[in-house]
Image (cartoon, rainbow, N blue to C red; front, side, top):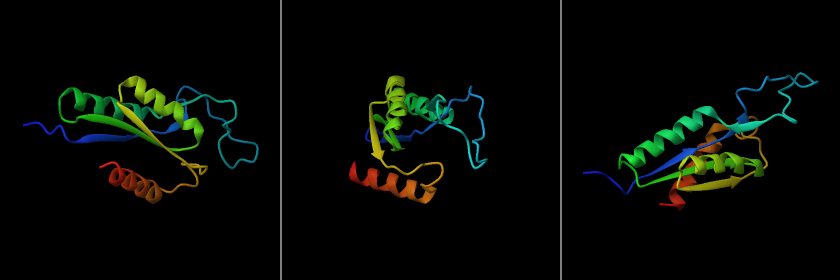
Length: 118
């Protein structure tokens, strides 16, 4: 018997496009991001694809993409929706997910979203 009550929540994140040549900023404190193309993390794309396969196989009833970050993260969510995700959740924050927002905080946000949408 298949469990069609389960939903797949897939985290998606924006990052520099993998085809872009990365440059160090003038202060040598990080990567220069201005003017560079950003897209969904390739590993997140794989996760979305697998969640969609699980839905097609009848293992889950819905695929939900979730992103935490600024307004630009909407692009990653749109990509996930275009790939076949059923819905998307955007948790808006001004904190940089790669520098300021620590993994434990991200996990707590995911936990809260899961509890609120259960």
